[in-house]
Image (cartoon, rainbow, N blue to C red):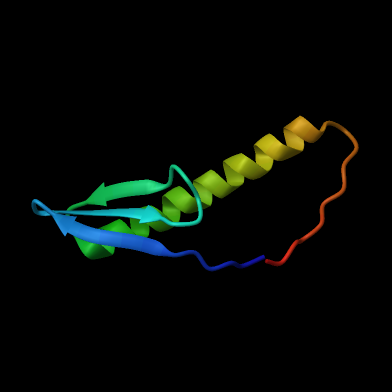
Length: 70
């Protein structure tokens, strides 16, 4: 499943800092805008995979997965 997320970015004191609006805790700081975008992509991917693994582990052996559109 491919989804789109919103990056909120700004330059502050020579650094680029950014957050992913839809996922709390996904934020990064880099020297350039391009580096920030890539860092946010990697961090978001890792956070989603961690959350997915955590949810499956919490569900135990028998569970159902269902895509939900909002």
